[in-house]
Each structure stands twice: as structure tokens, then as C-alpha cells.
Amino acid sequence: MSEEWEFDEKNPKELIFSHGMECELAMLDVNGQLPSGEIMLQLFKKIVENAHHALIEILQSDYCPKLIKKKLVGMPQLTYTDEKGDVVVQTYRIGGKDVTVEIFGRDGNVASITYILEVVTPPCTHLDELTWWLKTLFTVAEQVMVPSNLYLLSTGIPSSIKEYLRGLSYADHHHMNAFKDDQERKKIYNMFRNFIPHLIALSVNSPLINGMPSDDVKVMGNTADPKAKLRYAAPGCLRSIRLKNNVSMLSRNDPRVFIPWLGPEQGYNPDYFCQVIQKASLEDAKFQDLFPFTDWGTIEFRVFDAPLSINKRIGFAILLQALALKARKLSIVPDVGSECLVTNRTQVIQRGLFGSFRTDQILQIDDEEFREYYVGNPPYKYAFQAIQGLLKYITPELKEMKYINKKLYKKSGGISPFLIPIFLSVFGDVDLAMAPFGDSEFQLLLYNHFQKKNPGVPPGPQILQNLIKLTFKASKDPFFNPIGGELNFKKSMKWLKV
Image 1 (cartoon, one colour):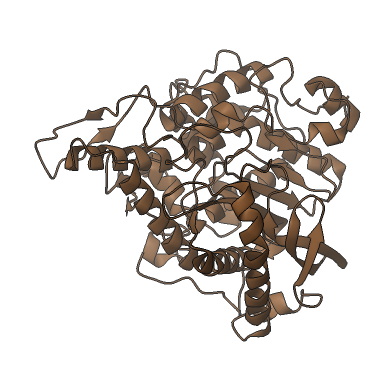
Image 2 (tube, helix red, strand yellow):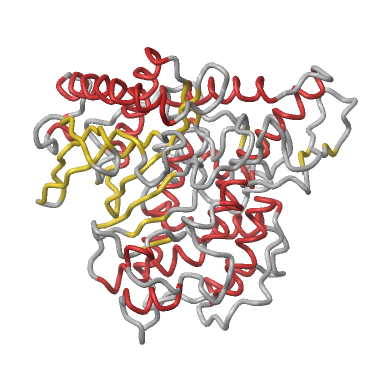
């Protein structure tokens, strides 16, 4: 995309609900490996100190928008916590309250094998604000890695890692707040829960380990024609090694203990939630796909693999905003049932956009609009079809929030640049291959490309080098997305009236 992102000082786009993000990033040495915990113990203090100085300089400069400066309560502080060690904290004012956020430091939930870098935005009330914080934190993170000869990588699992290590994977967590009351919070939680499989399928991004996929990459189409668009189906390739293995910090693929629908009789009840998932306390219960009882009063959505770009991160935030707005309008959000969710969750972790989508286990749904877009007519067979239904379902809300608007987004066909990669993945004419095509397919394409280009040479190092470069480029430009293409408004998207 030719245009550059800029903070809109005059008309920043207000969010319906406050939104914050926690982003986990891999720090790799020159060989593409994770530095040991002992090495990071020596390096990380200096990394955090450098980040602290850089953030103060940025926040005091004219580069920092006035909207953000008004919310700052003092400058970033360097502090120490027992859980994370050295961290940078920023106190931020939102809704008349001061909130202190650990905006730069290590992830405290991981053992000392190595460190995960965690950058955290303050709770934001505007999309421009959320984008600015992500861009700033990522840019600073890239800057402070250089003196330590470290490189940042944004993906669910670095392709160079030889084997999955417990808890050592990389995710984005979204936090939402500013609900009218607990009744609305419950409805939004229920809506997010219904679409966990769809959002996993859109975001899977950890298909490689030890430089290889879990099966052969199968390319379908006329490979002899250099102009032909190919399909990277790779049916046996696991799309999210992170979600497949990270069973201790997410929900289990078991309908008997899957996070429950909160109906009228349960109310907004943490005891019922803990009882269903078989946890003794909320402290034990917080590591789930979706958690509505955080200490900050937020709903936390935890399933996203770390995506390749800020562009897609903001796109996912917009999808969650639209789903929450849709839930606000309903008197009751339907329950599709844990059997349905777990079955489809399992499929999309395995095959992403190409996962089968089962609708025969769905409970009775009286909401005709919800049923139309969730089940399909005829019923969907694949996850990418269900995602197409999701995008159609929330299109009225995307228009209401002006993320689909002909006047605002003339250069991108009336759709926000942050939504382009999401629509493109299931509706578009992708430059590199045939849709459906997401981040996992992109990594599998890289593997296939380098394997064919240099037979006998392991493609892992070349893949890693490309992904590190993409992470660097994406940190500078929130409009950058490595998967380009065009939306076909005359064919696959003729249903959309912009």
C-alpha cells in the first residue's frame, strides 16, 4: 500500500469499547536461536534501560500526539517486579482513572529457559491511539535489540526452534473494557466465545518447527506456468503448533471443561465459570482462550498467534470491536454449544482456513440472522466459508463504525486498510497464490519456494531471515502487510455495498 499511516490529530477514530493489547515477541541471536536464560539475565536489564530512555524521548517530543500526551500521568518509570524483573511502566488516565501499565519488559509467565519480550499498550479509546502505541513500542523494541545483537520475530513459534518448549510460544492478547454493565460484558463474552474457531482460523501463524512443516507442502495448479496462481493446500501441515501444544495456558479441547456460555440463570458469575472449567479459583482459571474476569475489569481474548504485522493486529482489534457492538444490540447472544466449538477449534488449529467446519452439533438457535451467517445455507463445509459468513454478519457494524466507508477509504475500495488483509485472506485475489491464504500459508509458501530454489539446502535459515525482515518492516509501517492482492468487488465480494 503506497500511502503511509499517520495519526489523525483532527479526527482520530474513536473506539466503541476501550482496547489494549499485549504482544509477545521472540528475541533471537545471530544464529536464529533463543538465547539462554543465563545470557538474557545479563542482557535484558540494559535492553529495558535503553527502552526506558527511548520512550521518554519519544513521549516528550512533538512526535507524540496531543491526545496521548493528555493521558500521560508523568513519564515512563523504570521499576523492578518479582515476576518480571526490570520493566518500564507508564501511568495512563482513562475514564477518569489512573492505570499503571507495564509497557515494556519480559513475560513473567515463562520459565527461565529464555525470555519472551512483552510490549503492552495502555487501554486506548481511539484506533489511532492503539496503532500509535503499537508502532512506537515495536519501533523501540527493534531499536534496543541492536546493541545486544538480537533480532525480533513476530510469529507464533520461530521456525528455527528445534522443538516445542512448554509455554515458550508467542501470542497477542486483546483486552476490552468500557462496558455499560455486567449484562453487556456477559453478552460480549458470549459473542466472542461463539467465534473462537473463526478467529483462530484467521490468525494461525506457527506452521514450522526446526525449519520444517509437519508434512509435505502440496501445491495445486499449473506449476509450469509462471503466471498461474497456485494453491498451497498442504492438507497435512499443522497450522498452529503453538495452539496444538500450549494446553496449559489456554482452554482444553474437551467440551466438558470448555469455557461456558453465561446464560440468564448463571448471570455474570465467576464461581460458575470456575466450576465448569474445573479450576479452584479465578487465579487458576485465567489461562483460557477467553477470560471475562480479569483484575482490570476487562475481557481478555488470548488465542491469537502473534501475527506477521501490526496491520493485522489492528484488523483483529476491529473485528473484536464489531462483534462486541453486535452483541450490544442483541437481547440475548445465542449459544452454539461447547461440542460445536471444541470440534471446530480442533479443526482450525490443525488446518486453519482449510479446516472443516461442523454445524451438525450446534444447539437450537432462534436468532435467524445469527443462524444464517453462522451455519450457512447450505451449511458451510470449511472454516474459510464460516469466516466469510462472519464478515458478512458484522458488516453493518463495520459500516456503522466507519471501517467500511467509500469516502474515507477511496484508495482501498471503501474498506479500512487494516481490514484488507482479513478480507483478502478469504475473499480476495491474493498476489502470491489462490485464496484462502493466511499467515500460515505464507510461511509454507516460503518453505516451498526456498526448498525448490536451492534443492538440498535446508530452507529454514532463509525463511527465518525473511520473517525477521518482515517483522522489522511491519514495525515501521502499520499499513504494511506482506500478503498483497486485490479485493474482487465484482465477483467474490459483490454482496458488499460500500
